[in-house]
Length: 96
Image 1 (spheres, helix red, strand yellow):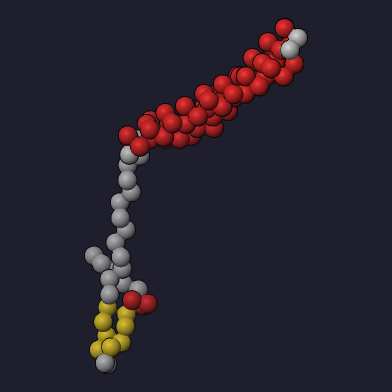
Image 2: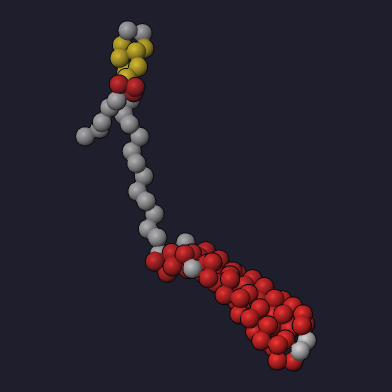
């Protein structure tokens, strides 16, 4: 049965024209694997960077070279975060 609203009733040349409401489109089904990847994207981006910085701090304290290993850890952490981002985007686009 088609539903009508008063706003859909128009008067044209003393004749009433009733237009039906637009039908709602069904939602697309979401793949649970892509949903979990999307929700964990923050962890995928922060974890490699955090691990690189912590490892750099530990190595700097052990060898006495203050900024060298931290900077190397930041570089490899950003690189790992970038590759994780590419992997997540690729898996989401493959499942879509």
